[in-house]
Length: 369
Ligand code: ZN
Ligand code: ZN
Ligand code: ZN
Image (cartoon, rainbow, N blue to C red; front, side, top):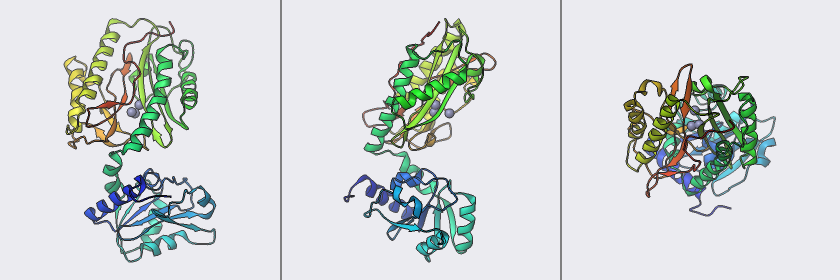
């Protein structure tokens, strides 16, 4: 049961307000994160159509295949349920719910096949991507969402702590084996799903999204571990770089530069500061140390139901941080053919100052020598 003022009804109210501002008559939500954000229900990627029809001026309806209907947690104050059976045409149902309304927005992740069917059923309509409506709403997390992100970050911290204490064997194992080990630990720590577990050892660490492979980790090299999962619908994402033996002086120097860059960007992330200024806070430290050309990606990305969403912490994004913005701060330096270093935490912009959700240590750690 929902009561007026419940987080879900508040989301519907904010959404309809924004639809009115943007001149969107109906929002059509299918695959992707907008649907669970709004209704609590996530559509399975099936050929059978699932679609929430949300008119700005009328009640919302969740159209689902009959066999999926039992998975919907009904919330009659927020939306009604229309289960369609195998002999019905769900596109006709959606079209009749849209009616004469013509300015439509549809999930960014809706299948092209679905969009094309609807476009022929609704020939007079104009179309936008739903993210135009939803992304800045979703970027500002409410208290329950921040709590969920904190719980996910804490679970990732548990595994990061095991890594930093040398409890995850590295030397002599393949990257793939370590990645599988980290994945099991993410589940043990409370995640329902593992989203990725990147392990880049030695020269492989210089590729930020390295696919863990058959390379055996040796003593005396750096290992970049970047991993995250989903816990109660919200994502974690953390990176720590450790050494399997005493680092060389250049390795220790790069680590210290990245550590200071990461800390500077977290400290810069106050309310009212632009996303690009946060990026610059990290980038200037790395550039001043002479490694600017080796920091080859943005400083961070928003995080929530999706691992990557608004706001993006990158030069050119002049949007200002607002209370509830949640994002990664993850500068790195990658020396091709040699090694890489990245340190990543999730941070929430808050009236009391930037709040790092990850607490795992940032010091250079030598493990399992
Ligand atoms: Zn990434
Ligand atoms: Zn990451
Ligand atoms: Zn990240």
